[in-house]
Length: 402
Image (cartoon, rainbow, N blue to C red; front, side):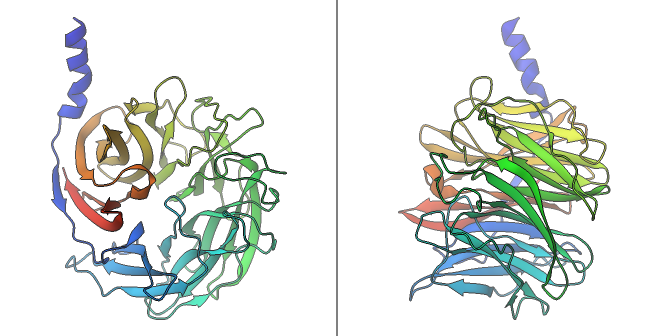
């Protein structure tokens, strides 16, 4: 009977099949920290970081056309010799309905390892020329500012959320958070000309180095992040912006994960209409697991979580996307020193799993492989990730069709 129950539990994952195809990316060898977003009209925008032979780094992007599926020639967004370049905190690229492109970079602001600023760049000619926008934050402290997410606030306005360390006095690192104050979550909106229009503090105490994410729902912008309370509970929360004010952050699921240091493993969020989905990693309640929860009221509340995968192999590093067919979730695993990238699709209510597939064996170990990125277009999933061969990074991509 026990074996029969085990087999029945696996049936949803076996119910469908998927085809994994290689997706050739235009980034040269040595590239890392990919980010993947979708422009109005369906073009996919891939950005990545390259080392500059003379020293420093540059942020580069290319556009994968929705019609014809050809890549544009790569274009440089920004370049610098004083950047903060990190496996977990990386630049993002966002297109707005008015055709403008926005990207952020991370620039050192002090001698401490994690002292850096978020800088915004905007292009109004398809990415040929870029100029700096107003300062994202103007506190002037040599502390950590990063893990930013971008979204289209309106046709020609950008929204950005980031973790802000102005109250920490620089007295923490990613292993021991014993600083003078807590990391906070802040957001701002920017107008078409690049001027900052408003800034908000969303949460006065958050996890120090977990990625944020944002999605636009019918009820406003949703931001997902990992919270932190004085008892070191680090569960995922969501807050919503209606264009004027932000709601009080609400817990997606009460994992009650007590974690004395940052897990460097943030949530991902997707939305379509009034539906929203959050994917996340947790170590609560036993072995590590990756989980998924759905909302039908614009992210105000979430239903019961679905445990997608559980066990010591789970690395997390999740991403999530949605289309009319369902919600797609990617995550990383590591077994016997070998990493792998996985993808599953569920119906919108998360009642059934439509398929599950291993997308790739990912060359490399530990943190160097970073965070794979996921988008859905034309009924297929498009993924980009970093692998490390001989100590050198390179980007790889795949398209998954049901």
